[in-house]
Length: 267
Figure (cartoon, rainbow, N blue to C red):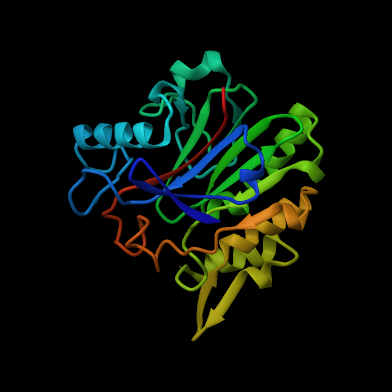
């Protein structure tokens, strides 16, 4: 994963995806916006307490810097579930970047000129791109979504809906709170151990405390879908350790903003 700058705004992108010039993908940071603390500064959360005027100006800054129109940006109402939805051009008004009536945590599209977005502050964004079928997808995944196998379900959606070959699907696992910082209680640790044959490898024990590895949980699910290990790129950036770059709900005790991950096929 590389850090880039466009229009004065820093962002990250996956090297695997950059091989396909037709795909647009970016993971933003918290840097370069207008929001004051604790939302400083490129906050993209419309419901977290920041002023709507600040958030709208941040979106406009992002749009100008990365070169897309705001009315091409779509999102879902994230609920920590496992629902995957298809977004078509005609659905855009019901799934705008500000308000979406669709409760889901993953989206896919084959329509050029649509850019799928999830908002993040410790959960993990997982991106999908099939360069053969020209299909993209994105998922927002916390521990609940990982337990419900939404990464696997998003991959299978591409396979079942668009006849994608899992061997050609490229995936990127973005920044999130990493096992160095993501402490979970015994109940959550037990759920992962019971739900996955490799559950013990997902929970690290240190000093009698349990820490969850969301990166590995999703990597293993993608591989179980048939996606090749070499087609899975890990960001290896912890949002809590790097809260000067990314928003972190855990590090900032819930009073913070959201960065975003977005992907689309260029029109």
